[in-house]
Image (cartoon, rainbow, N blue to C red):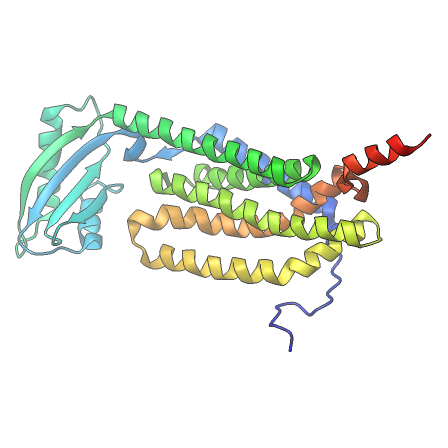
Length: 316
């Protein structure tokens, strides 16, 4: 008995017939994302911009969503709230306006205390201090270094694992997914914080993994099938289609649960991963393989050069 497959065994869907359309759509999405980044920029969170941190102690444990709603009604709609210890201590972080300083931090701290406190659950202000923008700048630089580290690591890995055309197609596909995910946050104006950056890095890993699975089958089929590159690529996508869809669906359910029930602090990361999983799945089918065909990949590209050179050397 064969294992469960989403698509029938022996599917022959002609994905390569849509290769020009899919590449044009992918290119349009990428340029739209770059345009959104250039025009709108990012709504950077406190992690990158600095602000004011306020610590409160409540008499009773407080619901974070309730505290966040009260702060939003008081005019602090983008406040970051988290509980500490037994749930009676709250850490509230806010973006500040003006020059900041200890005086403004104390004033904001008192306003936050009044906003969060209620008659049946009074709050005490424990501390209120300015979060230096320098800290945010260092975090931003570390985030960029992390992104560069991952990109360079992928370049080295793919260069050793695949032939140059495969490596180029995989890297372009992955960068396409990352740029579109980042552009999504620029377009929507959703907050870009460190958890979103972590989500973007995980999208890179997911996208490259999905593409490599398809490319492994492409490489194998190029060596075993006697057919045109278009037929080889179509066969490879069809053979891995069920695996790709099932894996993506399970991963999508996981991050969807994280988005719905993980709380506000993880929502940005889950949102980045949701967009990234959808993109990564589609791009491994409709971008990566069409790029291989566009680059003119053939069976000869996978033939061992050493064997050819040895054979030529034996000729008179």
